[in-house]
Length: 422
Image (cartoon, rainbow, N blue to C red; front, side):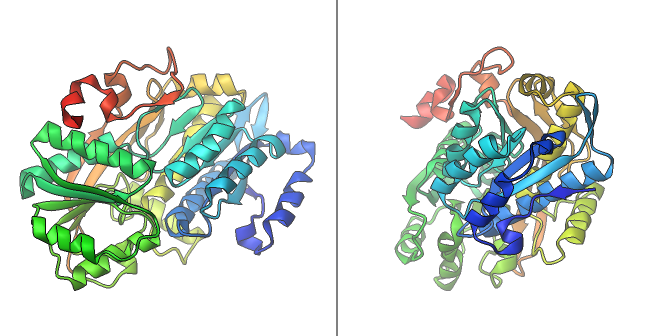
């Protein structure tokens, strides 16, 4: 049996009415484990975020259909409460507060962009509730209550840029969205270039609403790099690809958000994305029985999903990891569950391959894959980059089981990389 709180997405009712209904739930709801999720079901980022909510739903269904989780002396089912963040940063703060105070959540999972994540996360952790972010992140947040199921730049940017330099050449340009995640990706690209002999010829950032790209395309054509590195986010930025194709820009490109997040190869007419390289930890094209089974189960719940993206997998994995931690702790008490998570939690049948949360890091070991978009927009697996560990925090001396600094770290915080940022 799956228990889902009806959301505004399902009923198309005003959020205020939904909120009143949820606040009226009886105290007996705590006979269940409360998982509260806030993601963009409408607005600029809904294409990327909605599949993540399907991953939550599938994991909750599987756990509840199996009888729930043994905690606090009895079997409990998970109650999934979902709110639409509407691609609005301010709303994330409001909905996080609702999760904590009205729903009395045992865990909150929220955010697509870094700004959304931080608006929600700060409210959750200040109230000592476990928080998960379940897509790519900057990779350096070191907080006692915060956990991350998706890949870090260390796991995507560094090995993939190394491969690009070795096969295409060292000269690159970088263009990205002007917000914290893409600014951080720019720093990681600098680190990867420094580590592997690359040279960044141009680095520029653009507001989310920018949709006209001809001046940037002209500049790239003038530089003639060996490849481009992109961190373009949202519907407006995605217009770059069609405009670049129309302008005859054929320079190979690399991105850890394009296709992995927004499956543009399915949304845009070929060959606008031809010669794009992407390094997901999961997309539905990842080979293997676990991937095929996951796609089949997601489509059984949501037949109209256009593509099973990376976020669907890591939403699913985060719920499975929490279920394992609750079972291991035999309680939903926060500190006991964190102790269980910090003992390392594995999801061996994760869609992208074996996944293990490293408790000392609060990030996970997982596989990374490098794909290339062909002229017809089908994907070719170029290389399985193998199991990649989240070692960045460890390399700068942080062990979360001993001390959580309660702050974020970025590549310039690694003293060994100082020369890359002069």
